[in-house]
Each structure stands twice: as C-alpha cells, then as structure tokens.
Length: 88
Image 1 (cartoon, rainbow, N blue to C red):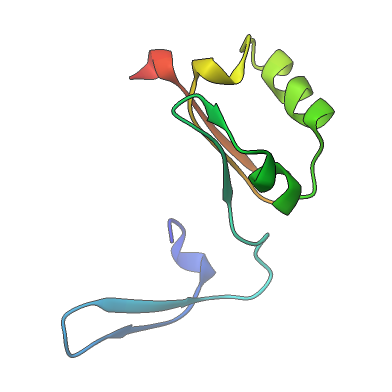
Image 2: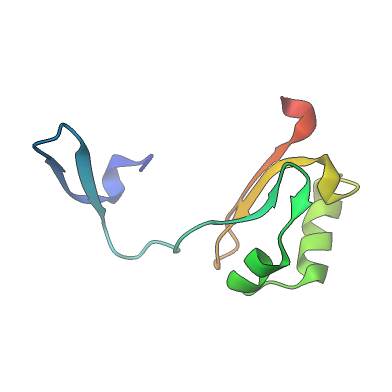
C-alpha cells in the first residue's frame, strides 16, 4: 500500500507484522507482463489485453521490444508500471 487513503483497516500482529486491509474499489491486482525482458502472454490474457495493445504501449513509450524492459506490470483497468533496463 503506497497511499494511506486506501487503507480500510490495519493491525499489528503478535509476530510483529502489519496486516492491512485495503478499501474496496481498487483496480485489482497487477500482473507481471514482462520480467527482465521475458514476455508473459498468460499475464496479458489475465488483464484482458491483446498483443496489439502491448505493441501500442511499447511504441508510445519508445521501446523497440520487450527485451528492453526490466519490469512491466499492469492491471485490468490499464494502469501500468514500466521500468526500462536502461534505468538500472
């Protein structure tokens, strides 16, 4: 959780870990579409997107291919996190 406004409930457990329940209305889980240049067609299917959608995202971000990506995560709503290998 990166935004405290999204926390519905938080509790410190007896083992010292923090358990957090997020508020409803989120966009759902993120799936790893590309990890270290390796594309996952299964993840693309899980977010309900097509190969042409992926190609458009790469083109819009001036990325020639998935081999140039360190990490690309997305959810069904189209929210994305893209980290290029050159950034590391």
